[in-house]
Image (cartoon, rainbow, N blue to C red; front, side, top):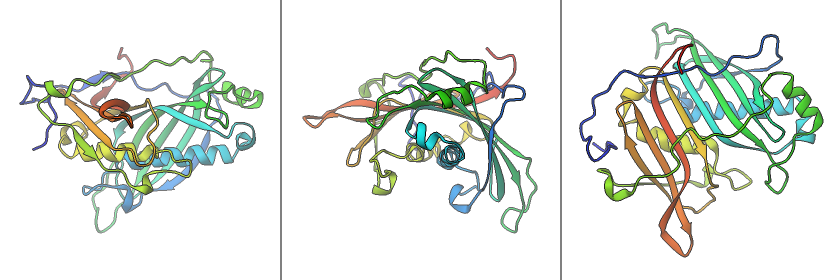
Length: 293
């Protein structure tokens, strides 16, 4: 069994979930964008659970639909995601209808925290006949507004006015949530694992699709079902771009309540064996309480 672990923790005993504060709610009376989607069989795993990469696709879809419903396509068309937080509170499964509500939770002049609340109205059919409670997934993504050269750029006046009306937090700053430095491979019990990317994982701008990162994490979670059999938080932070033809190496550490993954790429063409971190991911068993610190 390919279980990632620390050298001194070959046998892991699950402990109580980590206590976490929920993501901030929408400001009273603030406007938001809303869209409807369907859970399809291509969105779920063999237990009919909606996968994390599918959640990432819903987030991309609602972001694109939100931009198309505004003038941002003309004034602020280019955005990149620096981090996504996914709080799976009540898991989604197939079949279901999804409602996505999107609003700005915080911003500065060049970036925003965009909140998306996903709720699922579960249905039954011959393949999944048992009633299930309504699903709830809360998310937050740190979006950076960039120009056509990919450099951080100030929001247009109209965009800033619209987004700032949704929140009282106008001094958003970046602070990493995941450990950015990977442990040395030689101190771990589990060897690094290569992850093969496909041409379909890349968009027209030669960027690795956000959902493709989480497809790699789904491969890891097959060995760690205890982390996702109840509420859990996923945090993915993007540190460097991954372009077509780049080999990916996954380095993993399993804690009692958490899986940490570093997605690594060659430092440069002249040093293919020297790796640097392109993205970090944490998956944590979580209990969400209002008074969590």
